[in-house]
Length: 174
Image (tube, rainbow, N blue to C red; front, side, top):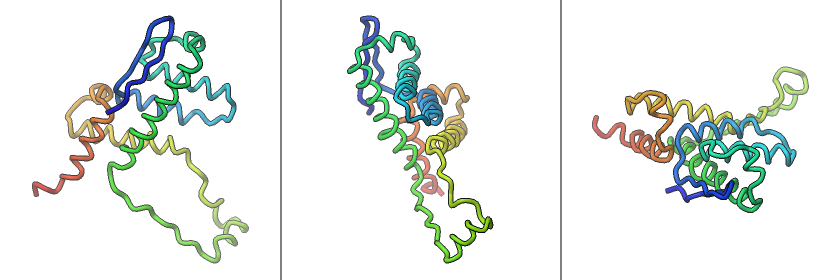
């Protein structure tokens, strides 16, 4: 269950208590593009995230006029739900053991002499999350026999729990 998040803008309170696949996909996309360390960029992306998650019911200007404590509480709540609840479920659908790369005495020599590119460039974790989400959407479309737009309207937590159940019980009837 996702905790309720609310924000007051223009004297009215807007709240959410569930997240759709589409909202999560938009969140992942915004987080992937948010690579800046500047506070102004972070605030802009938080405004965009709040705007998307609350269904575009408020403009960026209205969000700029919201009480700071309410704005930051809503942003923090959204990040908690997206990262600590939904992303955690997404990344644990399939239990995978991490692959350890064995080091060689020649690794450093290979890099220095151009035989190998720099040791593993760090990939944006949100890009990986988006790719996993796209695969989950494809699987959900096949399992549920829904259209893409129907799948995007599904509650993301319920969908991930259902897919986890299906994957865990796939071999029980054979």
